[in-house]
Amino acid sequence: MTDATPLPVARTLPDAETVTEVRHWTDRLFSFRVTRPRSLRFRSGEFVMIGLPDDRGKPLLRAYSIASPSWDDSLEFYSIKVPDGPLTSRLQYIRPGDQIILRPKPVGTLVLDALLPGRRLWLLATGTGIAPFASLLRDPETYEKFEQVILMHTCRELAELEYGRQLVEALPDDPLIGEIAGGKLHYYPTTTREPSARMGRITDNLASGKVFADLGLPGPLNPADDRAMVCGSLAFNLDVKAVLEGWGLREGANSEPREYVVEKAFVGDGV
Ligand code: FAD
Ligand code: A2P
Image (cartoon, rainbow, N blue to C red; front, side, top):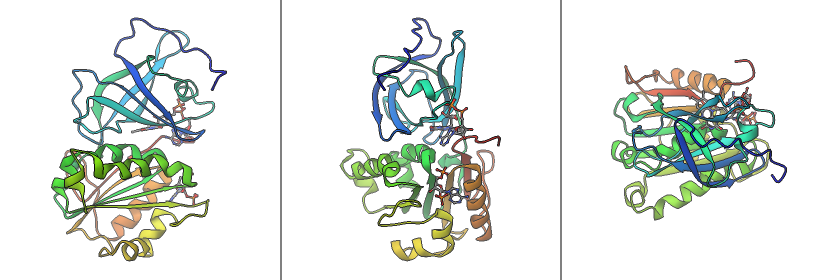
């Protein structure tokens, strides 16, 4: 981190917000907080465009899920560090006091409004796909709308699960969420390439029924009671969609709420 190229200083960035906190989780993952524009209203689970000025001072922007809930005074983001990524090769060096660009135009399908009422909400994520769910898990509305909320988060290694684990562990002590979430949240983290207490891909643990047995929940998901939100790589999203569709759940959208919704955690590798 010490050989960081200095960030371009821009005193009059349009849509500039100030970094207030940065936390590095692994050499590939970090989270940070920025000030919240007064004008920004968003629904938990939505994403915005954020970035930095490029070498010529033009905005270099990327989509980022807001990881903090809609009621929070500041905005949290959870980010990958792509070694030669145009944005994150520089963004990873931000420090408190630095400025980033944030376009206050939130959008997205991973919102409670895009789902029909149901009993159980399944949040299915790989990698940084947990970011929109970090927002929803800290929103009281999530627990008001559902009797049970299940977070399945899968990464290759244990260290990559740590952001989500600490977030979930902090919920019982959260003055706003603690009581309402109590007993409703089931957390099911798994690794796929490092041995750990729970292992396996989300698709496999759903299809085999292992997750239902482990959590003591009825399975498989059914269109009358279960709702799902999916956020990971394109391949992951497609495979989970196939499982959910096989159980009779249909994909919803803001304009047409149904039983599940999907969003890409990133656009990758020529896709
Ligand atoms: P890019 O040129 O954007 O990406 C280079 C390559 O890195 C990609 O082709 C892909 O293979 C890989 N990559 C990019 N992002 C990721 C990732 N998150 N996980 C694994 N591999 C990745 N990224 C976040 O870190 N956090 C978020 O909350 C987030 N939310 C997003 C929401 C949406 C709707 C979309 C479409 C993308 C989101 N992304 C998120 C990805 C983000 O927009 C950028 O791609 C990422 O910040 C890397 O930017 P870059 O310019 O450094 O590299
Ligand atoms: P695996 O290790 O078996 O590939 P990545 O780091 O490649 O983005 O993957 C993040 C996590 O998502 C890994 O645990 C990976 O499992 C899992 N994963 C990747 N692709 C799929 C898929 N198509 N279906 C289910 N899980 C997947």
